[in-house]
Every structure is written in structure tokens, then in C-alpha cells.
Image (cartoon, helix red, strand yellow):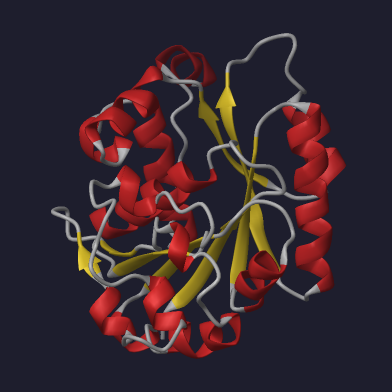
Amino acid sequence: MARVIVINSGKGGVGKTTTAINLGACLNKIGKEVVIVDANLNTPNIGLQLGAPIVPITLNHVLSGKAKIEDAIYEHSSGTKIIPSSLSVQELTKFNLKKLPEIIKQLHPICDYVVIDSAAGFSEEVMAVLQVADEIIIVTNPEMPAVTDALKAVKVSRNLGKKINGVIVTRHANAKYEMPLSSIKSMLECQIISVIPEDKSVKEALNFRDAVVHTHPRSKVSKKYLEIARKVNGEEVEEDRGFFVRLFSR
């Protein structure tokens, strides 16, 4: 039975979609069957970022009863499967969110993980997505507005009785103007499962229309996402702290 992981954030633009794509791609890299679902129905980006902006059948068609879920699954060249949402303005309101639990349930026999990219905020659409989660990963930046909205996401998830796997802090530049990681952890009362450094390779991957773990597999960002995937999969991970730290720790 597949584990359903929802990638959520209170604020947009913090790296939620990038996280969903690269977590899914890394789980696939370590031998797991993965389906990445773009449940950001109003402003979808999964297909766009993976080189399939326009496809014949989308999640919108399935939710509106016009297609079966298996018809909306597309396979990336890496082997990772995706279910995109429609970019068409005409499809914005033509779906029934009540069908989402049954649709996600139909994916259980065909994969090990369902990674869902939700919209930002706390709309009816987002609440429906959170309801189908087995566990939730919250993404934020080391900035007060983003962390404040992440706190709202934590509280909403807990009110729904959902397990919060942890928090991922993205675009971390280790700068003085950023919120300290200890403050973020204290404010959210959640473990920080990874800190993703600011890296131009993420933007370059967007231009290539692919996951950064495919375009820049040796980058620091890619190594971090692979660590996250291994942690999610229940593996023991020794994080790379750098040569000199390891040397002197001996």
C-alpha cells in the first residue's frame, strides 16, 4: 500500500513544487515506484517543470469524471510517473474535490509513494488535499513571513490529525538576515529534516524543464534531496558535514 505524502506550505514561492518533484525523483532513484500528483489545480507547475506543460488528460479531467486516473499518468524519462493538472483557464472550476480520496486510493496498488504537491494557503482545495495525506512535509524559507505561514500550516495539519513528517527549510544562504534554524524549529515545534542551500542549479534545472537531481546530480541541493528521500524511506542517513568537520571529529 502506497504512502501518501503531501508537500505543503502556508506561503507560495518557497520551493514546495521543487521539493515535490525532487523528492519524488529521488525516491525513484533509490528504487521506489513513485507517482507525483499536481494537486495545485489553479496554478499547476509539475508538468511545466518536467517538460510536459500540455497533455491530453489531466487530474482535472479525472476529478470532473471525464477520464480514469490511469489515463492521466505520464512517465518521465527517469521512470518517475506524474499526474499533471490542467493549465487551461476553462478547466479552473470544472472538478469535484470530493472525488480526490477515491482517486488517490486507486493509486495505492501501483506505487510505493504518492507525492502530492498542494497549493499554498488554506483554501477548500488545499484542505481536501491535506485530508488524503498519510503524512505531511512542510516547506518554508528562513524568513519571518514564510515561517509564520508555515506555523499556520503546522496548526492546520495537526487539527486534521495528520502526521507531520518534518520541515524542510529551502533557499538557505547562511546569512545574518535569515532566521536562525533554532528559532524556526522552536517556533514551528517540528523537527527540521533538511536545510536546502541557495543554489543556482535549481534555476538552471527549471530552464532545462527537469528535476535538479537529474540535471545537476552532484550539486549540494541534489545531495540534500537524496538524503531526504532516504530518510523518508526509513533509511539511516549520515549527513555530509564536510571533510574538515569529519577529520577533526575523529
